[in-house]
Structure formats: C-alpha cells, structure tokens
Picture 1 (cartoon, one colour):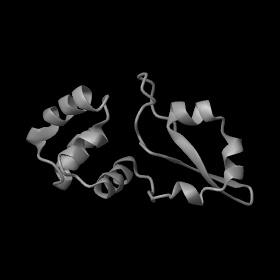
Picture 2: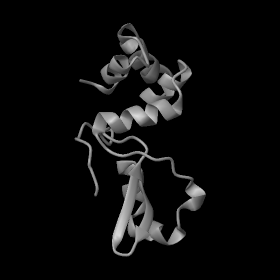
Picture 3: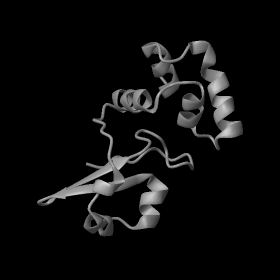
Length: 116
C-alpha cells in the first residue's frame, strides 16, 4: 500500500484524488507529494502523523533553533542533504536523528535508509 493509499484509508483524501495528487506533485512541486497535499488542504501536522503511522516510526516536530550546533558535526552536510535527515540531539552516547520524509527513497530509486 502506498502512502497516498494509506491517507485515503484514513479519510484524509479520497482514493479518486491519488492520481491528481501525483500529477500535481510532479508538475508543480518537483515531485513533492507533501506540498501537493498541503495545496489540497491537508494539514502538515496530519501528514506528519500519517507518515509516522505508515512507516511505524515515532514522529515529533523539531524546532531547528533547539538543535545543538555541536551535534551537526557528526553527520556531513552532503550526507544529511542527500538522505534527507538531520541530527537532532545527543544524550550521553545516544545519537538522535530525524527525517523530513520518513520512508521515502533518497530520490534515485534506492530504498530508504533507516537510522536508529
């Protein structure tokens, strides 16, 4: 089941909208499904919550101003950009990272990478 099909199951969109959303994302938003969903009135918070359920991962909103600068040195910027994730904290020896698009491929057809 695709993410859009999961949204339809949750009642956030209609199944009949799936192809329109894909087309709109490709034509107007560089393939960004989330931007197309927001344009159609789905709230970013609902998208975040649904993505978490879809990939069975916890979600949380992070204010970038709350991310300690020191944790950014652990991940090279080009890797963070390519894989669309960012370090968000360090507690003792535990490193936390987050993704703005959990469950999505990096963009070149390879499977998503998960970090713990």
